[in-house]
Amino acid sequence: MNVVEHFFIGWCIAGVSPSLTRRERGIITAAAVIPDVDGLGALVEIPTRNTSHPLLWWTDYHHVLAHNIGFAIVVTIAAFALAKQRRLTAALTALAFHSHIAGDVIGARGPDGYQWPIPYFLPFSRTPELSWSGQWALNGWQNFVITGVALAITFYTAWSRGYSPIELFSPKADRVFIETLRTRFPRRRSAA
Ligand SMILES: [Zn+2]
Image 1 (tube, helix red, strand yellow):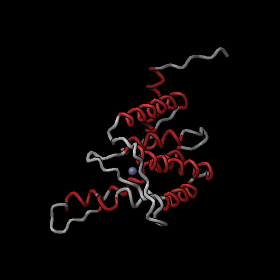
Image 2: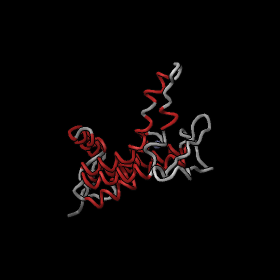
Image 3: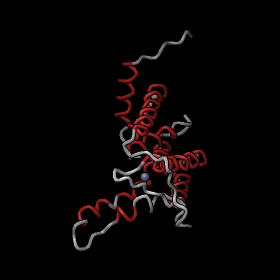
Image 4: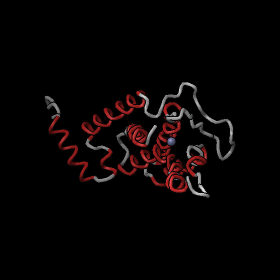
């Protein structure tokens, strides 16, 4: 799955508990995206690809360096250290991280048909690698459906709880967004 899809799935996982703070929601959402840092090698690979010394950092390291249990442990410990509600945040962070791994295994087949098997047990073991024969393409309709559901949940929780992922970038812009949303879809007044 792509970064945007991972992001919204992570945000939905962060929404499991309304007691979390903005910072904790940010940590959990980041954990759903962060494995793709190992894709940044593309920034080196693409410019050097056709030179005499190509650095194939993307080909060699994407889905390898950060898509594994070792990195999951590091990220979970970091979440535990950074959060106030430590155990809850760490548990949801681990879940968000693995939603990324699962998303890539089930829905990230490349345009060339390559499955990008994931050596999940690194750095402890190079095998087995995770892949699934039913894997759909990165741009498959299933990913659109999953993203649509995650977006619907995101809008609903924004409307009902009063915050959206925009808060991670600008709390002020988030307030404007929530106000607009609630003006457009007013809440029913309760009888009391
Ligand atoms: Zn990934």
